[in-house]
Amino acid sequence: MRICLIGFGAVGQGVVKAISLKKRDIKNKFNMDLKVVGVSDSSGSAINPGGLDEDLLLDIKSKTSKVSNYPKYGNSAIQGIGLLDNIDYDCLIEATPTNIETGEPAKSLTLKAFKDKKDVVTSNKGHLALFYNEIINKSKENNVKFKFEASVGGAMPIINFSKKTLASSKIESIIGILNGTTNFILSRMTSEGSSYKNTLEESQVLGIAETDPSQDVEGIDAACKTVILANSILGIDCVYDDIEIKGISNITSEAIELAKKEGYLIKLIAEVSKDNLKVAPRLVKKNSPYAVEGTLNMATLKTDLADDVTVIGKGAGSLETASAILTDLINIGKLKN
Image 1 (tube, rainbow, N blue to C red):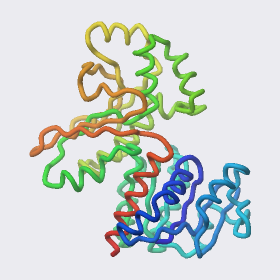
Image 2 (tube, helix red, strand yellow):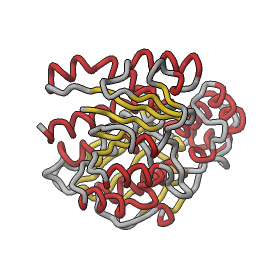
Image 3 (tube, rainbow, N blue to C red):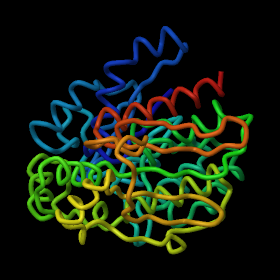
Image 4 (cartoon, helix red, strand yellow):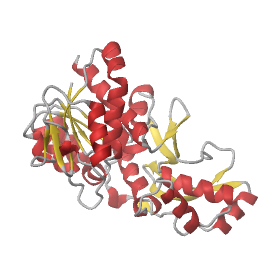
């Protein structure tokens, strides 16, 4: 499988590292030969129809921050959507930053790949939160595969899990923690008794929170994931503006301490059901499945046959997110064989 990767930040680099680590195992187990033939970042691209060296790609990016500095095959004139017209590939991995305003460039990249009859795997949330049905319908019209497990829970399996492992059950609702940054902040405030401001600053120093943390702490990221789960698993036709959202920036250490005394924790909870599409801080019992700490994500799927099923996993991280992307690639490859 010839892979074109657009977006070479933390997630994109994680994908290349994961391919380097696992390509021999994948070849032996699934008879799939993964070959990265093109990579693009804001500096340009590196293109080699015969396949780029994954470790060299990572080294060049680490040392120069520009993939276009790749020896012999680097190109500063071609980047982004232009790469799709300058290389023959089988699957696009779209790993650009989430844009909740327009869904770009993810939307244009995805639709261009579909038009060219190419499969797509994405970790992006913006275009799905804004244009889910349009994008799904375009993939069907062009008879291509479109996978997006990494867009919701990083390494936490939920979309593939619900569609395959729970295929016999009707899923009635999903309630869970879908953002690792806010869970880290609330967990630290609970264990340390620290203020929201100080804990946010600590999480930024540790690289868990972004310099601009608003997408996480204001519930925007979790709301995007709520849209994706509502559409893909429960079949609820909704977009980002349909979600009721409240973040954690007004949570005080005093509120957390009061909750602790009563045997509760405060968590940012996403609820996905026909009656509720909501992201907001809620009280959860200390010993419940919702009492996960750090950057962990979790979700409880309420089903008609299997009762409640809870999944837990790391919701962020370069390699963790890459693991979901690699699984999607393997699933596409298995369908093609």
